[in-house]
Length: 211
Image 1 (cartoon, rainbow, N blue to C red):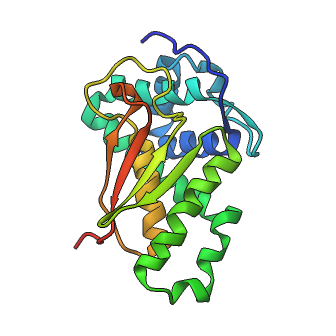
Image 2 (image 1 turned 60 degrees about the horizontal axis):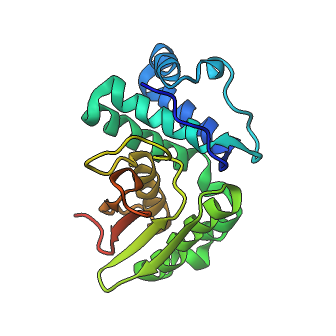
């Protein structure tokens, strides 16, 4: 695969570190090393980004990681791994961020489900806007919430795709919704993707839990 040209936008080191460690947990040390090599990121082998919130991990490198997953494991295999890594990334660290701190409080836990979602989903978007150059917004419609990533690190600079590719973001949202809602699973579908030629990456979250 060809290298993805560097961007002027960066992710927090911690988010990249958690994502890479989550992938390592899923595919093993040899697997993640092979993916890093394919992504032209061999300098990260045994040298993961530091565990801090400095914005130093280039969007292009995060995108290359995701593209390498897909190239190595095929679209279906890569998708499954990326979803699992996204979920692990949230479970590992993101719920401890300030914007979501109040979500663990008793006062929040007794709110009706839709009120939890109305507070919790924008709180997730706020975290990414605060700790990275990934600018995200949320708006509510009758049956769904629409979560929009205006600058997306997952598909930055990728070659054109005929389908959405931001599965690590989908997995992150799925796990975030599970935590915010107190254990429910929700359907999250990426309806627009910059890799398909859209101007933003858009995720449609059903208000009704699955099952």
